Length: 197
Image (cartoon, rainbow, N blue to C red):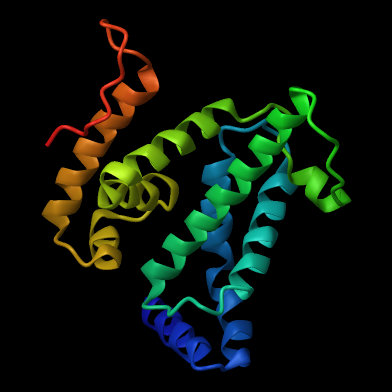
């Protein structure tokens, strides 16, 4: 199936709109699993949240005509990035409203996708990943692909065009850096922003 997905992505790249129609049933289940992983930290018992996230990601995927799809792993990496962005945007909007920001009009479908609690942890993680990307973009990408995208070491290596050993080294280093960053100030009151090599 992986080969079929890659072929359909390449056909979609070349403007074959029917390829997209054939692709979506093949990837829907995996997109749903990816969205479920994202939603696991949100309020339980709301299956429409996962479905709404998949639908929003699907709409944004259709709009990504600039992407030159490489293969299945690349497709799911981009999907993971889109889902992360959607959830972070919603969390930031809810945090703004809680601080007294202006009201935002959303459709009923969008309202159902909004988590009940502000995603402070998701915002903190997103901020930390943004800082990490400024220091070491590849480490940030490894985290995004492995943690958010659920890609294997080999799939991550394929997307980033590096060896699996490099992915494992970057993954270990990035996790340690993120742990320190999210834990807050160090004992001397200063954050350590340089990832350890």
